[in-house]
Amino acid sequence: MSVATVHRASWLAQTAQVFARWARGTIRQPWGLGMGLIQPLVWILLFGQVFRSIGDAIPGGYLAFLVPGVLMMTVLYTGAWAGTGFIDDIASGVLDQQLTSPIRRSALVVGQLLQQLALMLVQGVIVLAIGLAGGARFDGGPLGVLAALGASLLLATLFCCFSTAIALLTRNQIALISISQLIVLPATFLSTAMMPTALQPDWVAAVAAWNPLSWAVDLGRAALAGDPAPDGWGAQLAGLAIADAVLLLLAERALAAYNRSR
Amino acid sequence: MTAAIEAEGLVKSYPAGRGAPRLRALDGLGFEAASGGVFAMLGPNGAGKSTTTRILTTLSRADAGTARVGGFDVAREAGRVRELVGCVSQGTGVDPVLTATENLVMAARLRGYSGVDARRRAAALLGEFDLADAAARRAGTFSGGMKRRLDVAVALVHGPGILFLDEPTTGLDPESRTAMWAEIRRLAAERTMTVVLTTHYLEEADRLADDVMIVDAGRRVVQGSPERLKATLAGDSLSVELLEPRADAVRAAIARVPGLEAVAVESRGTTGRLTARAADAPAVVGATIAALEAAGIPFGSVSAARPSLDDVYLHYVGRSLTADSTEEGAAA
Image 1 (cartoon, rainbow over the protein chains, first blue to last red):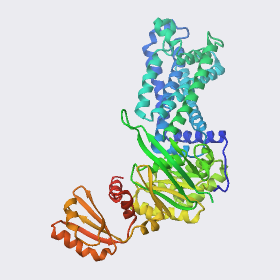
Image 2 (image 1 turned 90 degrees about the vertical axis):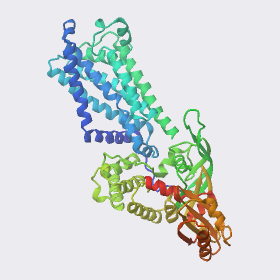
Image 3 (image 1 turned 45 degrees about the vertical axis):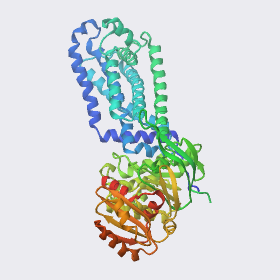
Image 4 (image 1 turned 60 degrees about the vertical axis):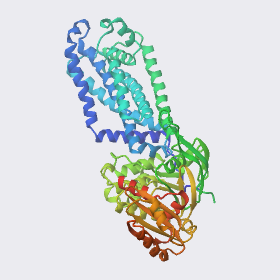
């Protein structure tokens, strides 16, 4: 028995199709994007007011300090929900349908990741625009902005892949939400997103130094401030890149484990 | 000619919760399905039909045993199997946010069709499945029957050699079910393709299948064409609807009716059913009615007929599938 003509799509073509599918979903359900933008606005307004008193201790003012933190928090929170799409696909049967086709498993993971990154790039630009409108100064100029957005995407990759892996392993929306909540809140407060290291208790500063969110915040903050080579930038960049590679592999393994367990 | 499917000794078990023994979904299942026509796996929920489909479509791996689909080993040549087959699982395989056309174009492009070819293929399939008017509508707005037709169209986008349909009419209203049966018959007749169907509806298997395999508890019970399976049962079947499930009293009452064989009394809550075989069932209907009346056993309809697939199922499995199907159908 044979098929008349066997067509084979390249990995890139398959990844592009997966990307396009999720992108259409985002555009057609814009409330998700809308909520994702309201959240950073609230953070900037809220934290900007609550922590205004420490602004005197920070050169450039608290808003300029806070905006890179909110940029990274935005991708952290959006990325933590990335796995919900896979849970929906498991529940509806779409994922099973795809897994019986010749689509490469990595294309399924990377295609959705790229759509999430595109979404977060848009969110990041809007967060920086809000900061600029609020009076924050980015001495790093356009290059600094690009570098900060790049750092945000490295962080986003890490949490998207983590969320995808958890979704595929637990296959349960409540489990994914619980685990995400458990991680993102402590990760936020045990980082340099809202509070400079100098004002943190020693143990918090020690933990924050190993927190990937802090790495991305520090890199983004330095880039926006126009500091081309802040202390430890190489290790932070390498740390994010290695974590991304490990988590991407984990997400792909989780998809294979899902396939095996059916 | 290569068989469409060759399976041997398939075993698959799933965890059944802490402390409980693993649930054995397949227990050494082996069978062959010839190329062309409709092959049906018939059995109640939990018999192992869907697990078998998942293994044959590379969605799952057997714990033991081997299976070849279109000549390709499902474990070692999964990629070739995926190129060959089309699948319609029990859930929907289409993205509710995408339109019907977009779902089809995406499925075609994931399989390597160019944009132009994918759109051409999508338009042809939408026309074939009477969905052309809904081409630009999102699949999420479709009725159950339309969604099912789109599912089948997506599974056919690459012209598969084998089409798997896992419970294709479960959850559909009677009208949509009849329409889907017509589609399946048309596909099997018009295309050089093997259709592999799982179902717990006897009527579905009887109407559609060229070859039926009855599956129970993860094993093949019997296999053959519906006609051949029915012909293996000698005589006619007699069926009496009981208004009270008094099995012992019923058996005692009809013990002296001559010519009744394979007597079975099933309880269905507050009612029941008496089934039996007889060389000439119409001739014993009167004696059976008289015996039940004499014993004061209330009953409803009495029928005598040529053996049905339900009789085949009852004969080989030892219980009727109709009651299960009716309950599942009502619940669906």
